[in-house]
Image (cartoon, rainbow, N blue to C red):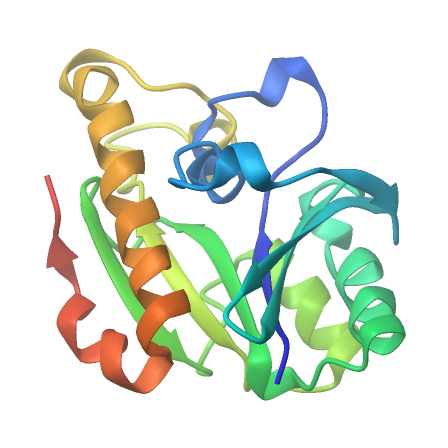
Length: 189
């Protein structure tokens, strides 16, 4: 049973290490990242990781956040991956920076990447790894998610990514049902 892990973000160097791109940034901290050979297809970049007798696919949609489903859906169709075997790694403003949570289905909380995926898949019932970025204290949310990290958040950014990558590797090793309860709004830094 193959699985697909999708990291949400926006293409282009100006978005690198912005809050909206934390789904992609996590992939850079995986312990096996040097074994991931990225190819261009499905309006995205994808890689395959062989784990035991299973294939784990990774996808970074290159469609911009608001059209993420246009990359995910064709890849799922091509590799015949069922929705229950998809995990979407995304930024979450309703969790503070440093906190993560696994979630199975549920609402979209105004996240345009999740909205696009829901539209293309026809369901909200996909697994998520919610990576907390916190809410802005002033200004609008769109400027917040497209901004970089400052102050203490900047100092803890890489340790945070490493912690999220560890949680993602636990998902690969143990499966969603075993790992999700261990990361229920868990502060990892």
